[in-house]
Image (cartoon, rainbow over all chains, first blue to last red; front, side):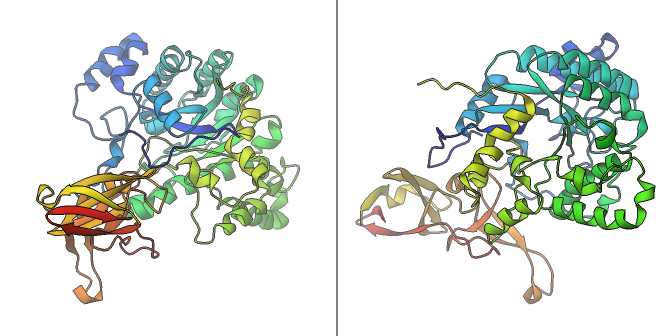
Length: 371
Length: 118
């Protein structure tokens, strides 16, 4: 479905960077790029019946919600860089950072050798077909948590290319959480290459944190737990192992969780820290010191009845320099850039959130507009 | 006040819709079980093209139904194609929302022709 509205969206006065848009990484698309032993497997998987973000042996999903008639928008996907460029133009987005569709669930794949092979195939596919065109599409190197040494090699390989500006850390179903020592090579490589790491969860029902979410019968009440609780758990895990103290130059981005959970994490952890500082001996400051330096993407941006409340929320964690616009296009819960632009932030804060923060974070030059 | 033609009334069967333009925006004109309704093609949520969405029914229940579910408003629920926000096509109101509604316009049938008053 095209993005259409009865009012055109053009923003001549600011650059819009969208730090979370999704490409449809089908098994047939990755098959030519995967290691030979898995090529036939992916070609076979391509022939199997599939549902939205649910492909046997490739994208694990337990779809337990009651399907209602006519609610079919969940199937929107972007298949080519040309289509992505057209869609982002319609949204008045200048620059997009690409994330996968199906590999959102890759941390749940039990076969570490296969998972790492899929990660390498995705990175090669992005490099070859998506980010080499110079039309405002940039990649995030996927880091398969199942094989941190291999992920570190991938980060050094693709991070050397200007078109790759971040590292995607699969967050749904990751076990152990991202603070575990085994992931140290990934953070070393990202810090060395100067690439921000970007945590991104998805609506996965799986036996890793946050587990037991099958108790919710509907996505309405399960979805926020699958995103925000997953981000929160991984943030806490990374603070617990002092990742931001051990890697002071590493930038850490939390995507697809909105912003309203951030003040809670600062205040709650700082309270615990009064009593238990000796149990976090590698942290050199209270947790909020580090959380204020993390980055948070807007989507799903909160829509309070009093829009001013969102401005207050941002101020609570001094977020004007730390928040990054994201649409999550083309997913069912995407935010139109207007949704953030129409919030009563100051003009300066809007310019930062909509693009300037991301340009600085990812080291991307502002685009030069024709005409 | 403008009066915009939306074509012959008998060309718009129950369940069907057409669109008219006014200045720089669109209005969806619907035949809702024999009654004509017109709404601006702009969702109050994120300004998506609500009038282009699927027309369906929905599930509801309350104390009046003894908390049993019912499939209701069949053919009367408009789903915005962006985020599936539900509107009652009879009134333009968001179903069980916070009072949001589609901007409604009067539809007149004059000598077999549909006219939207803007």
